[in-house]
Amino acid sequence: MARAQAGDEGAFALLVTRYTPLARRTARLAGAGDEADDVVQEAFAKALRGLGGFRPGGSFRPWLLRIVVNEARNLHRGAIRRVRREDFVQNGVALLERSSEDEALALISREDLLAAVRGLPEHDRAVIVCRYFLDLSEAETAEVLGLPRGTVKSRHSRAIARLRRAATALALVLAALGVAAAVSPQVRAAIGRVLRFAGVEVHHSSLPAPPSSQSPRELLLPGEHETTLAAAQMAVRFPITVPPRLGAPTRVTVSDNGRVVSLLFGTDRRLDEFDGRLSDVFSKIVYGADPVDVKVDGTAAWWIAGPQDVVYVDRGGQPVTGTAHRTVGTLIWQSGGVSYRLEGIADRTEAVGAASG
Image (tube, rainbow, N blue to C red; front, top):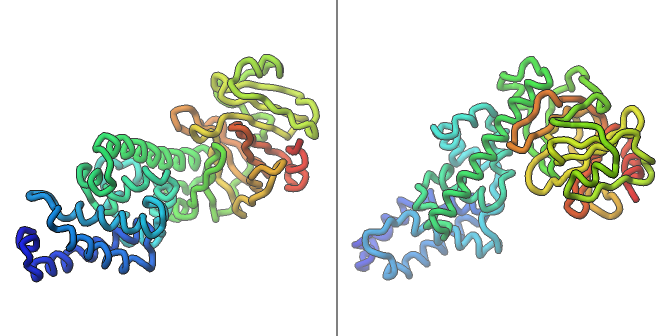
């Protein structure tokens, strides 16, 4: 590096040869895609022009990678926000899987791991990419992302906790629903593509649905107790909505110290209402089609058809296996920060109509 700073073009050429593969991989992980080579070329050109500002004794690798990341950001007007699946597969999943501090991640398959990482918030994902996919230290990650080390540490801890939660959730959901081959690689590989919307986490399965379990009417969430609608409104911190087309609820319950209010209509229709902005509240395994985008009173919603297995997720992020049950047809939407989950209506048009004001 000292020779390159002194004007030795051959020395800088050696740096280019040594770090081009890593720089290209970083550009791809930063979202450059097919333009990665252009980003790397421009990054090295800027590095060459900026050699005079490189501090003696510093590490060239994080200094260069920060330039690469900034070039990718300039290209796409955003921080590391588009990590392609093939880049995960080719560029270091093994590093994440064999990390001693993340042994819990071995509970889920490679596909689940990719889906879980891709599902992280943008800034947390950037830290995971740097720490594991690029094998950077905490200090190097801070330098590359231009963040204080304390911020890197907190984002890293938050991301790892969420990945562990995804691993645990998948394992417990499978066990709770009685999938006999839950430990087999074939089953784990068949359950992936983690989707999240309005506090509901969805795992898609290509397997046939196992035998049915309890009905929504029989479902009992942690601490669930029957009450009146007026008393329920006093027990929670969000407004309770009763869609007029569903009629008056035959039962009202409050669960988990006011986290969820459930309205039951007749024998098979259940509307759960909760604040889904802070964490996942329900976890599902969906068999068959993906969620379909629909509208409820002009608000974005998901319709999930076909058989699906549901488990409640407690405040600590752990699935409560005793709440596992099967339902057909679920409508999920969010309005004013409150999430709504209507199950028990098999027809999409009827469900959307019932939920509308």
